[in-house]
Image (cartoon, rainbow, N blue to C red; front, top):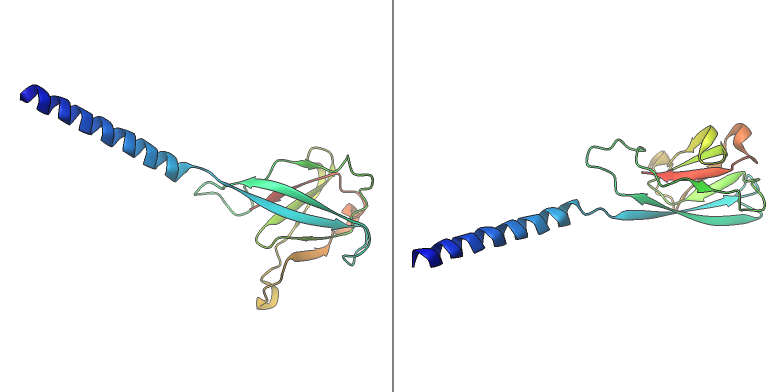
Length: 142
């Protein structure tokens, strides 16, 4: 009877360990977020445009806002890089670069969804300064 009890306790402890491991795996399982951005070749959200998507991994629990970003997205395969304005999903930041592989001069396109306490369908605006007409890569951040 003691052997059966010892085996039973062993199986119970083993089962508890497997259950705890599964719960930990579920709790730490990361998900990702897709962000859509549209770049326009005119500064009034008009003209030729192209839609791009980036995937941002879930941020760590202690991550600072804007520090978790998607991989770099190259625009070199696009015929033109004359982007002058943009619109993208609320709640994110878009970092644009004038060099390939997210290098060179950069600017962060802010999330303006809470400007004047208004909720907008998307964050939009003009690409700042000398980066207009010269964006070669970008990434989305949360």
